[in-house]
Amino acid sequence: MSETKVVVGVDASPAGADALRWAARHATNGEVVAVSVCRMHPAGGSGEDAFRSAHRRALREAVEGLPPTPGVRVAQLLVDGDPGPALVALSHGADKLVLGGHRYQRGNVAVAGAVATYCLRHAKCPVVIVPAGGDDESPGVHPRPVAQEFR
Image 1 (cartoon, rainbow, N blue to C red):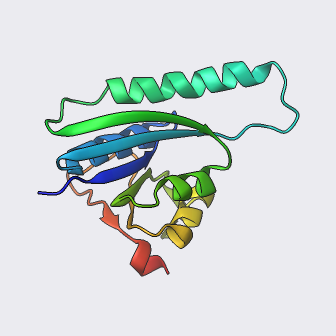
Image 2 (image 1 turned 135 degrees about the vertical axis):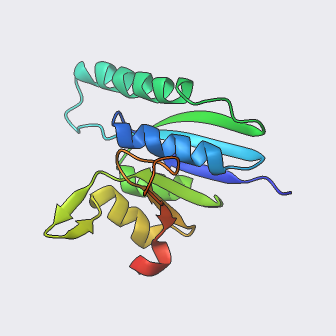
């Protein structure tokens, strides 16, 4: 069986942790790259260190919260930039890009946020949106690749 590579966008939200758990369960004999993207403000300043530290801590806590998954390595990556383009660039050559959904709705229709929309339009690999508050062990929740349907 060949190794898989799954890139996961992880933020400090429960949806980011759900996406990471889903990805770890579905990366057979491979690597999960948990990515936190810091969108730095052009003004810079002393707050940047605290901002990066908060991102680093949230990423570490999400990875440490994973149950053991035999055959799966989890790497942590903290990058600066715009989240959508950064995640798409990092997903080149990956088998999947996994994001947490944040349950945005317009009427009765679920809509993707700006980062998810960017990734759905530009990623070269399948994109999986894991609904907020669920992963595939939650009854009635079925994450699925949506990139082909979205384009």
